[in-house]
Image (cartoon, rainbow, N blue to C red; front, side, top):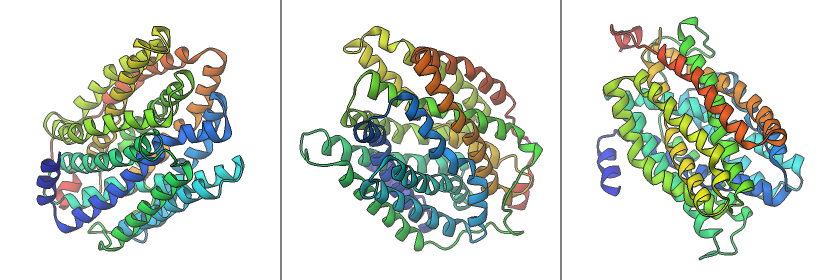
Length: 406
């Protein structure tokens, strides 16, 4: 792994190296936050599945507004916008660890963290494409994804070691969120060393909505449902149904990150070789099997085989969540104007959060009234819509306006 990362960095320019370090900082904070947040909620506030689903509405609300938030910041340049988003993320993490004296106050800090996280999402892909130069877009996105996952691995390791009772058994949620906030601030300092990336040509558009991008918009809407199964309900199945502690969840993240470090660059190369539509179509049957596995895992035993089967489904699900970079590569090739990229990605984030906000509330209701297996089986059937949309994701064979302008 060290050799692969070294070879990757040697191929990058100085600005892409700096941005890779900033992405790594974000990955480390994600590894800490995402592996402990569900346990933090369960242990600190003792909420159930229905309340956990409802909580996703305010958590995902900044994502719905991403097109507006990112659009306003893009006026200052992509890197400056990324600096502000990372600063919000750091403030939110600090507030979660030290200032969340009640559940409503915790929600406020969670939203502040979410603003930073969701604004950075479209900026990451747009800055990466801007810095790619003559290199293949899928390759660069895959390499950045690999670096981010390697950092996520370190963050998950903090939770696994620190909260597993093996070495640092006195590590608390306050300690872990403080570490994450400091790392996010380091990301701010790294980004401050970068020149402000602005696409050449006409002034950067703030908000973009073109009917020609409808396939990307549709895929983004459908992704909101798919990702919430992984982010919210698969984790909740582990925490509530299988009663797994934060250290176990972190251990699973370590495994998935190790796999992802090698898989994401490979996925980028597959995307460049076979085309984005092929990858997006292949994702559907694999994910349907994973969701069906979530549904049947408890019936196989809460301990023993059922538990390890659930582990396997979660690991494969995590690996498959690398596909958003394929959508980024796809939309970058169909643009009418290269300056559309950042605002189009921001619009995609906003659209996927329409469904990402609705789905957890509906899913929590289905879980509470009918049972978790109906939720997961319904989500598997829903993926047929994703297959239909992915089938429409064709890339023009003739150079588009973006390529011509370059």
